[in-house]
Length: 179
Image (cartoon, rainbow, N blue to C red; front, side):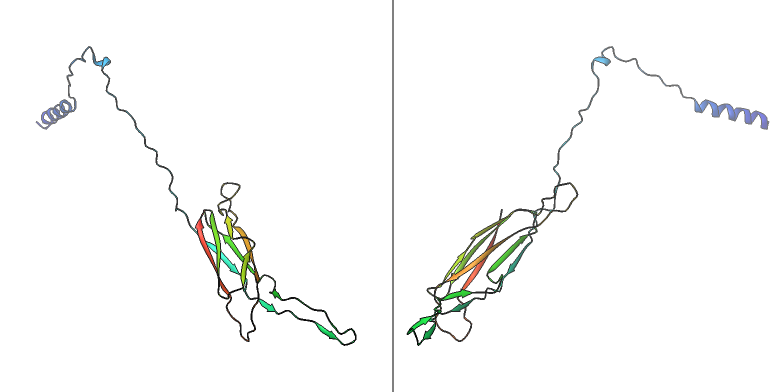
């Protein structure tokens, strides 16, 4: 009896594994109406961290010395003065300069203005505006760029009246602008 039961059970399992499926015939126009889907794409530009500004300003000391005119030395033999000097402004090397370095990934312009405090004294700049290109200037992909630098120099003219202390004769202002 066990054998009969085992054979019946095996037959039943085999019948359950095979399933007969019936499909309807394809319509005659099935190949004339294919199902399709368009493939679409959208372009999104690369994003960057944006513009980053970093500008270094190196000021000279902006300390000037005014030396008044001198008649010179009295020569008692000729009854005249010799070695007369004119009034002049002097400064140590680089004291009259402002150096600007652009480390930014954008161009910058630096405008130089000044306000004179003492009447009769004039400030004259050799450049009133410095245009500095971007430091994003590498010549090959993956290389570092080079910061750009420019310098402006100040000349002081006019007469300073006698004073015992250092006095402020004016103020210089640098204004940074895009490009």
